[in-house]
Length: 252
Image 1 (tube, rainbow, N blue to C red):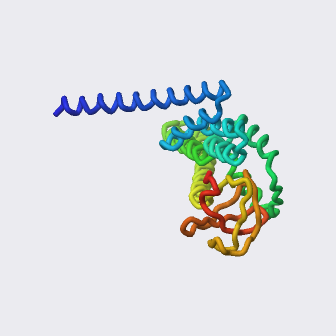
Image 2 (image 1 turned 90 degrees about the vertical axis):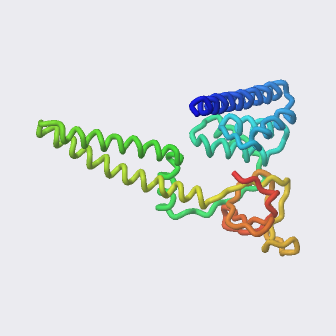
Image 3 (image 1 turned 135 degrees about the vertical axis):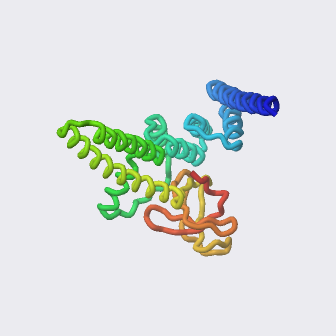
């Protein structure tokens, strides 16, 4: 029994090691193709990794660069957005995304949000969900340390400092956990996509014979609100709503 378990562990270890090696080899192959200017070939290799379920800032960033080089603005923005979702503070991704957006045809004026909502969204966007999670763990550890210090120290002044530190840390911890819950709930409900078609006509209903609602172009970021069969309901920043076929939108 022990030998069989040991054998399974070895097989699992070498399988993981082989998989990681294969991913690294494919990434290096795609990077070499990109450097040589063979962007279409590089895209095929990068996409094969993405379709296998691999995610990473470097993978999505490189895909965005390769698509931009081939003139596919919609796909470039899609993968820059995917990279930014994983690493919101990555300056290279932010720079390239803003650079590509200069090529957008649509200039949608967003509806001005109520100032309190704007402040709230600014606070939420300070950190990603992973960032709020890490901060929550750090504050929880500080709570345990201050609580332990309070009970173990015999000095009244030090106990007072520990007590106030505990109260402040506890309040910050509750606030951070609350922000994390809101962030996770927001990410699970709010979905965004990128228009991949050069020109896309949104319909007033999920029907090819429906009335034309508006026209959008490649690279525009839209909010996805509903889905019916092969149709998705999108909302623009100015409040306009329409239906488009799902293949025309890349989900971030």
